[in-house]
Image: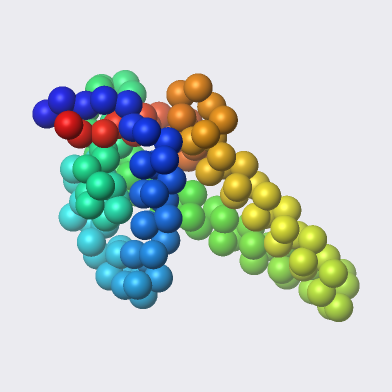
Length: 139
């Protein structure tokens, strides 16, 4: 299997497709599908687009634990951040202004994470950097 750097447009397409698959399968279908594809260093969208996540230390496909950390814990961090902001905002000011500001800040952070695909030379998201993953395209 020959690998080459993945085009940023293709990575963004995979990200959008991932969201569509999560919504379309009610998250549980995506999660079950992920258990199969994570063993090959892929998410369901990456599997459909022939993209693979590589462990930078070994140069081989990322294993399930690394994929679990990359996707579930990062996903959970966003949701925990949202719920923390929502609860704190509600306690401080129940009229919703702080909730809107907090949600916009969290959205800005998420967009900053995703924008790494375009703005960084190595085309990595924060999740990729934190877990030591490099994303490649299969030829």
